[in-house]
Each structure stands twice: as structure tokens, then as C-alpha cells.
Amino acid sequence: QLQLVESGGGLVQPGGSLRLSCVASGFTLHYYAIGWFRQAPGKEREGVSCISRSGSTTNYASSVKGRFTISRDNAKNTVYLQMNSLKPEDTAVYYCAADVKINPSECVYYGMDYWGKGTLVTVSS
Figure 1 (spheres, rainbow, N blue to C red):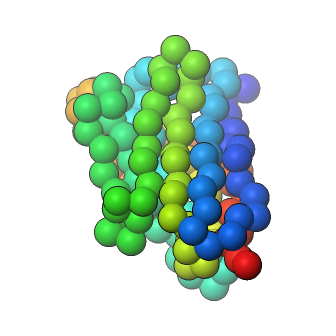
Figure 2: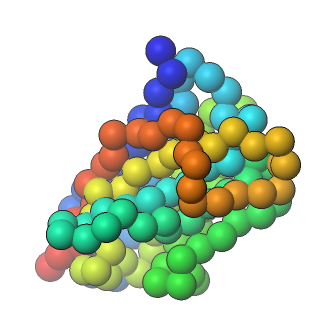
């Protein structure tokens, strides 16, 4: 069974940090660019960050640039999202998604092949 599983969400105070993990099972992430998305209550899902197959290319939404860092460990079949200086407006369900790519240096926020079920991040005092 091919699936992505996110973990690491939880309740954190403003200014705090969390690290989300996205683990693939049933397939290897080596052939996939990975995107992190989030959806807050009453809002549309948005792309937060993505990383290419090789890890050479990363992209961040302007709202998280300088605070979030995406990385990958292909040996562990895992992608991470380190979130620092969290704000209440970062509260959302965070999803990872995989996009098979021929170009090892490309990542995008559309046409994803597999999605995880999400992990909830709540930033509140």
C-alpha cells in the first residue's frame, strides 16, 4: 500500500517550534519532489514549501520564508519541515504530497500524485 504519513504536529505557543515529518511507505521518495501544504479552517489549501528530488531546489511561500526550512533524507524515505517562530496564523492542518519528477531539480505545488492525511498544528497561548 502506497502512503504518506505526516507526524509532529501539536499545540505550541507563539514563537515556538515544531518539526513535521513525512514518511513514505510502499514506495521510495527518491523519485519524487515533495510539497508541504496547509489548510486553515475556512480557508483554501495553500502550498507552504517544496523540495526537489535531489534536494537542490527548495521553495517557500512568502508567509513562511525565513521561518520554515524543508529538508529530506532519502535514505530514511522522509521529508521534514522545521517550523520556527510560529505564529497563530500558522495554525492549520499540514499535509505532505509527492510528485513524481524526471527533473531532479524541480518542485511545484500542483499535479501531486500522493497525499498524506495531515497533521494538525495549533499555535496558541
